[in-house]
Structures are given as C-alpha cells and as structure tokens.
Image (cartoon, rainbow, N blue to C red; front, side, top):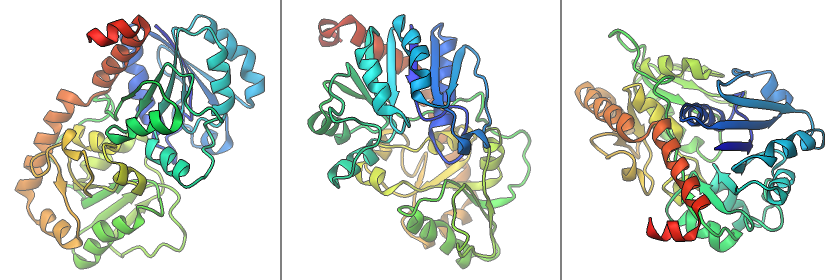
Length: 362
C-alpha cells in the first residue's frame, strides 16, 4: 500500500509528541513492504530544531505554503491506496479538502490529540485542523485515545467509523543502557511544559524534591517559564533529543509520567513516554487515569502515585522499582512496539478497503 500523510511534523521532536511516534510507525510500515509520503510544512520553530531529515523508505516533503505544494500533493494522491490527515496539521482543513476530493481508495483522519479536539469542541472553541464538516467524509477515523472518545468522534464530529491506534515504542531507538552504572538521578521527568499538568509536576516531582533534598531529580522539556521556581536539587534540560531518550530514562531510578488534563479526564490515552521508558527497562511512576490497566498493570508493571509522600516512599524501595521495570519491559516488547501498532493499522486499512461485509465477518 502507498500511504500519503499530511501531518504536523516527523522531522523535529521539539515541543511535540508526534514526531517520535511517526518515526517508529513509518519505519515499521516501510519494513512491511509499503510506501509512504509525509507532507510537512517547513516552519522556522521546527526547522531550527530539526533532528531528522530523511527516513528510509519514506518520502519526506517539506513545503513553505500549502498552495505551492498542492500540485505535488495531488500527484502523490493519484496512486495512493490510503490518504491521511492528522490532528495539528497546520494545513489540516485544506489538506482534508484535497484528500476528500482525491481518488485515494481509503481516506483517513488520525487524531493524535482526541481529548484536546473534543475539549475545544465542548468549549465552543474552533478546532484549527477541522473544517465545518468535521470528520464526515472520511472512511476511517483513527484515534490515539480509545474508550468513550470513539463514540464522541462519531456523535459530535460525524465520523462513520472510529478505531483506536494507541502509542507505541520502537525498540531499535529505545532500549536499556549498556552496563550497570549507578543512576545519576532518583527521578526523571520528560515532558514539555503545559499549564494544565504543571500542578501534578509540582506535587509528584517538585514537592518530593523539596522533601528529599539528598535526592537528585531531572526534568527534560521545552517551554518552561523563565520564572519557574525550580527546587535546588532539580536540574532542567531544555530539550532532550530522541537519540538521547534512552540515556535519559536510564539515568534515573524511575521516571515520572504526568497526563494532560483533557487526556486524563477522557481516559484510555497513554503517553508515548510510558512505552519508551518501559522499553528502556525503567520503572514509571504515574498519575491515575481510566484505562491505564489496558496498557500496564498498576502495582506490577507501573506505579500509581497521587501524593508527594507516595513518590518519596516508592523511591526508597529499589527492589520494587527494579521488579516493576523488568515487568514493564516485558509487556512493552510483547504488546506495545511500533511493529505491533503498524500491524494493527495495516489490518484496519485492509478491512476498510475490503468493505463492510468483510468487517462484519471480522
């Protein structure tokens, strides 16, 4: 199959979670014998933080303006089996119009930010990557979020068929660090600053740091305000490139996951960081949200903490952290790799292309 995608970015991991996911998914897609073309608007803030310029088996097309790319995009769509537009594509509305008017056999929208999409809709805010017809006209809508979000995409945005395509990890890029060196930090956190999740970062990392001045904490991520009141034993790295993620995760006894408010409310929306840390054989401490047990078993493969005291207690139990890390590693490689998700996506495409009768039998 030939897959043509109009997305946010695959070339820069700065300030977004899309790029790393696409790199794993597209690498698996081309290994399975398929072709891919990814259209990405060439914007300054990604261009100056670009950490990938080519992806084996995938044509990466940069364009300054969608009108200038329209002819090339139309040419690629002529022989595409699958045409896809994603959430936060800066030209999502124009790209969707082009896709829906094209002769592509299967027209797909992939919402990697479903809780944000639905929250904007509920608040009466415009969704910048969706036109007035919403998701009507697409043959298939994929969602990074499962559960009740799938019903809402159909009921509120006109999707005719919605299916989950969750996060994943590429074990070729995320793996345990060699050797058995003593971790440099007690707890790490990898995440771009977001006002809605900062209260959890304060409770689950900043407060434990202040309660445990003898321990070391590291935060990696962009967009933190200059006025941020960092505890003395918290080190901040403004950006951690994907190639450095394994070393970052493995540098701590455990890593923290904090879920965006809309995603936690919706549930069934696992951060890609959960799978990355697990593949690096690093224990994860997380906030609670519905559907977590669909991906990792709380208490055995992941630790759920709601207070600073619970985090401090968890960091004292090295044996527990090591057991959790091993169990999470085994689960991630058995169920949550990019290859697994690519096979799921391929199956969804094949069933949709075969028609309703085949889907009913399946």
